[in-house]
Length: 415
Image 1 (cartoon, rainbow, N blue to C red):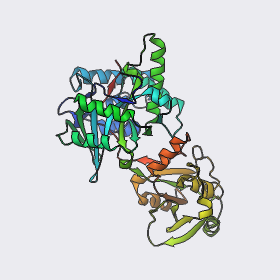
Image 2 (cartoon, one colour):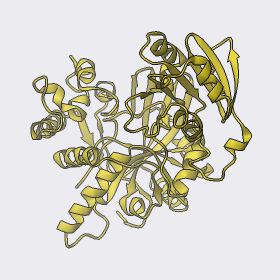
Image 3 (spheres, rainbow, N blue to C red):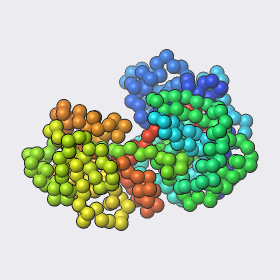
Image 4 (cartoon, rainbow, N blue to C red):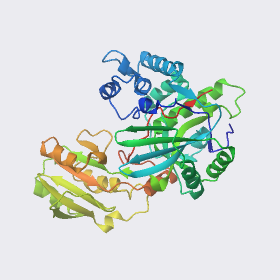
């Protein structure tokens, strides 16, 4: 492997023929331990036994204890020993298609460059937490493999799209359906196609991490430690790479990430709406409000929906973070009116992914659990890229990507 290439092929570790459906599992961070335990019940080859190995230990086991990582290694080794997972004989790229609700997006599984990540050519838009990084580092070291892919986007590249479309014309080598999402994988091993894909990625100005900031940061930490321990490191080592699935940015689907707040800070509903009117136009709506454009918001309170539109003078800014809808709502409503200034720590606010629909907002308010809910227009991929290009950080809970990748369909072994 060359350290200079943004993306390279690799000899993937994959489910043996006919085992993909039994192996494929949701990402480790979208299920609780108990949810994972229920999902993996009666499924001995589910990758949850590797990504959430505490499900095979006593209830209440600390998921960050050494026993958990040891169990992950044990379960991983068993899948290899029993031939459920097999390693390709030679390096390749892998086309990866997600289909949900009749909508498909097609990307490519690559070994992405840690150096490009360090130099910000592979760009991020989130801060990471050391404890979560530590968890992923321990998982990688226990398995000597990266099994949870990073979700990334590449800027429009017609040549890459065309090469992937050609690869996907054949019958997929792996296919699994989970949570109404079809996951399909094709191996791309032709040397000429591999070379063209490598050159196409090398010509890109950047890749953009969409989801998987802790996985990529952990991979970089593992690489740093192994480089320090290897005086002959020349960049060709697989630990200098991290497992990534890159999709064209225009195919990425971001759902809205909505907000609910526990109380009105002592205000009456009328007083609250009056104050909201200082920065937004406010109109009652006979139906639930799914914002149709940036700058538009829905507000649900006491059984009624209202349509809010940010006033133009409050929305005009060239700052890529400040112009986001999530920022406008915080700056002009949540902070000054409701007193919610720190979205990361304030227990009065919670977040509802758009996959749950507007009915979930209504439910939480109608139950009295929350006083008011806000629906937002989804963040656009172009806005995320602009924030990353500026070297800035997205506000908390700004993006909800759907559909999710599956764990276990392609893994990167650290030779």
